[in-house]
Amino acid sequence: MAENKKLDEIITQIKQQVDMLLNDNSVPRNVKAALDNAKKALEQEGSYPVRASTATYKIDEVSNDINLPPYARTVIWNILSLLESIKE
Image (cartoon, rainbow, N blue to C red; front, side, top):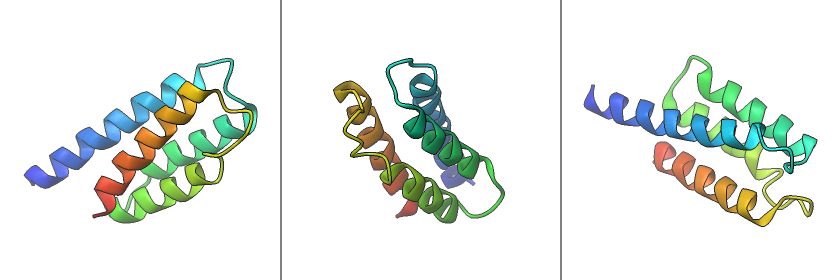
C-alpha cells in the first residue's frame, strides 16, 4: 500500500510539471497535445507501469522537437525520468 502512495505522489508531481508546460505559451501546440495525452494516460485505470509506459511513449515522441525551448526540454526529460522510476 505504501508503494502505491509513493507512486501516486510521483504521478501527482508529473502532472504538476505537465500542467506548467501546458500553460506556457512558448511550448509548441504539438508538444502540448502530446503532454495532454500523456496526462490523460496517467489518469486512466490500470497498473502503474502500463500507465507510465503509455505516457512515456506519448512524451518521447516530442521530446526532441526542434521548436521546444531548452528549459521545457529539461522539464520533459525530468518527467521522462520520473516515468521511468514508475516502470521499474
